[in-house]
Image (cartoon, rainbow, N blue to C red; front, side, top):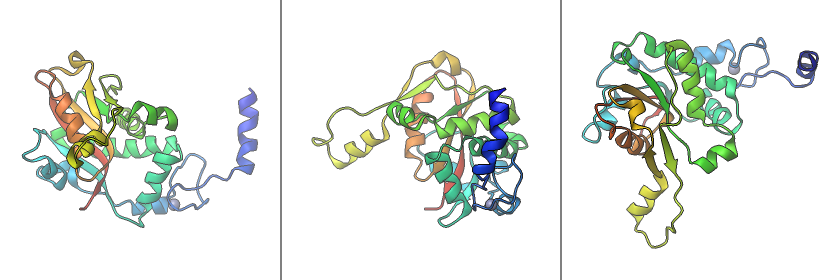
Length: 231
Ligand SMILES: [Zn+2]
């Protein structure tokens, strides 16, 4: 009751702005204005085998399919979107983009036997500080469209605690990625799972996580990210 009264009042003082461009010409239900939605740099990777995201993993890890929804480029609307998602706690935006990612996968044949979504885990301390995992937000939106479970307890990311000073450069780098620990192999055994992250660049973190997931018996792994960075 209290909330019902407060909410419209608050809106008078807190302007509702587009997460992409800051425009306030949009309805309360929208998180992005039509102009920004139409400017999203959508890839055509979802329906295409051998796309650039799949090629990242060639020779590194057996991936059934991989894709990204958007191209990342600096100064684009996407940079604002990622900032809102990662640092501003814009959860509605995460669900919105997640739904768009789900729609993109819905008609892609190579993803249609996926059984579950797994967000790339953050370090526990970082997730506590941020209050959420942006990849989980994306998964929740995707799950609404794809009608799939989101598994958040299957794997976790071990925070590096040991000192870094005695390590060589490569060991330090590996340590930075964190060690992923599969704690519920039975939950994914025999399934086709889709690992989800926000941005893919080198794929190193997704590879580290994916390799650990693939230690579950008869598991197939696919990968989907919100954005793909051209190296
Ligand atoms: Zn906008």
